Length: 116
Image (cartoon, rainbow, N blue to C red; front, side, top):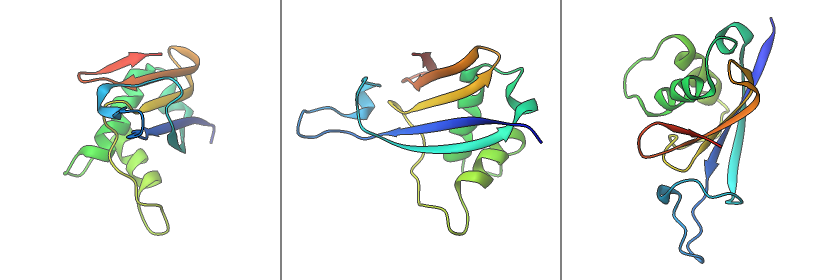
């Protein structure tokens, strides 16, 4: 099965400079990155923001998720996986190939996603 790499960037706040990731994405901010492989068929017709929203749901929803969100949840959590926090404001999602093109990156904003 053909896959597409989606990289989740969990942005780190920098207290020494007064930067909080909740202020929004800042270029050059430290990030913990986690790569997830998703089926190409799940990415090809979706925008990066739509894919990011599924990753957001997988990491934030207290209920059972389905579809692409379930694919993300299975890849991110489970036995032997590192403990990750939920995606939130200031974090990024980079999709290797989607309806927007190649290597499309979006940042979680207070409402929705902003293309970088």
